[in-house]
Length: 76
Image 1: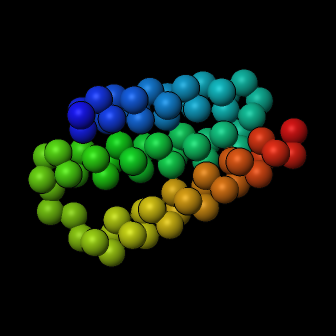
Image 2 (image 1 turned 90 degrees about the vertical axis):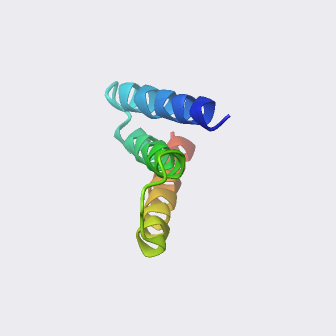
């Protein structure tokens, strides 16, 4: 299941980048958010020794990026 999740998250990140390149730059926030999810899930899958503080900081930045992206979508 985790591998399927990683593939889907990566697909969303790629599609968000493609959407952002068509004139919606705020959608890069969603791309970053889902790229962070991919990193987190890969770290779990491959059992990387990643510090909890690093992941917490990454998720905070990803959440702010998603908020900015959704705000941009709302404004349109």
